[in-house]
Amino acid sequence: MVLIVVTFILFLILGMPIAFTMGFPTLLYILLYRPEWLAIVPNRIFTGMDVFVFLAIPFFIMAGEIMSEAKIADRIVRFVDSAVGHVRGGLAQVNVFDSMFFAGISGAALADIAALGSIVIPAMEKDGYPKKFSAALTAVTSIQGPIIPPSIIIVIYASIMGSSVGGLFAAGFIPGILLGLSDCVIVAVQSKRRRFPKRETPFSFKDLFVSLAKGLPALLLPAIILGGILGGIFTPTEAGAVAVFYGLILGFFFLRELDLPAFIRILKSTIIKTCTLFLIVAFATIFSWVLAMENIPQLIGQYVFGWTDNKYLILFTMNIIFLFMGTWLETTAALILMGPVFAPALLNLGIHPLHLGMVMIVNLTIGLITPPFGVCLFAVSSLSGCKVEDVSREALPFILVNVGVLFLITYFPPVVLFIPKLIGLL
Image (cartoon, rainbow, N blue to C red; front, side, top):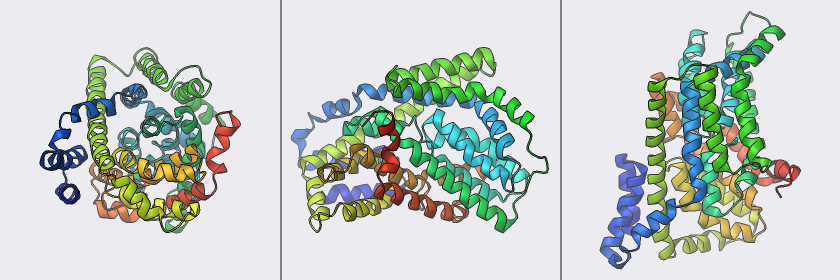
């Protein structure tokens, strides 16, 4: 196993794609030490990807691409700006609320950055905000995408851990909103301290209703997806198909922003992102299978859990380990690798599966904005032209508050379980 660890770390340092960082050390280990397992590898790869609920992933990815190409984000930005843009630091608050709304469509942080970053960052810079602050805020607010449903990572977690997708979707509402509101508080404090711009145009109900009418078709999509899943009308996979169909109708016939070249770009981007994600799932499955065959999860579990049976201390330890893992390992891979290590022991201690799942997901999602390897930090750095270290410095207060929200939901399960219990999913 030393070979896997050393090769894994070496590939990470060299910046290899995460799928190959997990896949090559695993295959090398099998070739050198367990060649008899080679015949099983193709079956394990296929089994790891052959999960019915995974069909929802390309649909949700495609729905996000459609909303981006159809310029749905522009309408969401205008609506939110008419509602909160008049306060000091209003455009920064718009950035936060835009991400909360778009999270109910895209289900992924990078999709949020791609759709909103190219609109909000230049607008904030033009309005007088420091570019590095605008970029950092866009990165930080994007992590609501994987938490507020629908969420691609929730679908993956539910499939590998045997949890309810609908229950986890319901459990993600309050944590995602809390992250957004905590970002609003930081923005308000920084706006006052740093004298961020304030729009001179006063609040207008007329502008609000006009922008709401124009943005309503886009805002209905999350309600259709979530209402259908939580109401038992359709499965997550069917919900993804409905989202794609609705988005295409909206883009081609109502908004008239889509055409054949745009549709081809949507298909191309969806295929690339889906294949990339499934490649990670495939190699992460092999990686975790080899670790399981060598009893590594059990050894880690015995070491971590051997010194105490206090679930609160164990949850604290898990959070620290996951926060560290999230700084350098892709979220999907980290979840597939570490979820089976911690879940059995914590479930035996009485932690509710929905609560545990949401703690893990929020934890690893924070890793997307945590230096030194936060994926979203690099994404906004590329988009804005700012240095990663400057973006990271501006993001630090938001990261600290988000970690506070993480520990809040860790030690107060009702925060997570309230909505699932309210709608009868517990």
